[in-house]
Amino acid sequence: MDRDDPLSMWLIAGVGEAHPDVLAEHQAAVHAELERLAAWLDDARKRGNMPHVRIWGWGGLPPAQADVERIKDLYRRVLESGGTGRSYVEESLLTLLAATRDPALIPFWNEALDLSRARDTFASRRRALVLSALAFLALRDQELAAFAALRAAAHHNNPQIRALAVHYLGRAYHGLIIPLLGFFFLPTTTLAYAWLVNTHRPIEGINLVILVFAVLIDAGGLGGGEYHRRNR
Image (cartoon, rainbow, N blue to C red; front, side):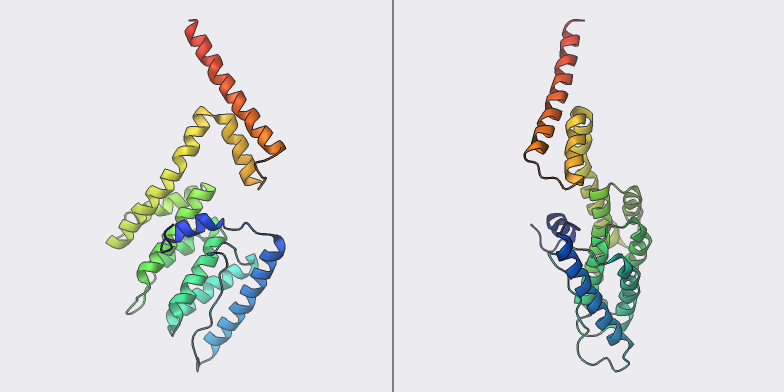
């Protein structure tokens, strides 16, 4: 596992998957920390370090939907403000937005890809986070607009952005190869497995029986096809 690669971390974390009580606790804590960050940014004196905003489980838990627009606004303000701890806060805010897996954020990701400031030491990390967010949408949700945004970034004027976009676009497409092969060669099994995963059902007990039955259906279809080919 590459801890410097946001996409790998989010894929391992299983973004959005948590007990409702844990998610509610996380979202309440994030909301309170957004309030502190906003108060710090509103204070002209800006004493001390920029207040941190937590991310749990490598960024696996999303913020409350009501806080999404505020996070976008705070991110722009953080970038303009500067201050000690800014890079940590930037990463936390972008990770929280990525955890929503919301296609409506694609215009924001496109905007964030071009954001910069003088002596911008966080630029490379910001670009990796933005492109990882798009690749994550493409991989986890097969979001066509995310694929389109990655393809557009692969033609960006900035050579570093182009290189990163090609990297993440390749990973997004690679992640679709196995599902596509499964759809063509084991369609019933693929659909059954997708249903179990998307409804967060454990692959055990009756669910395992369903999956095995799907495999047998596909195997029977392949066997029948082979039988008819041999008797032509």
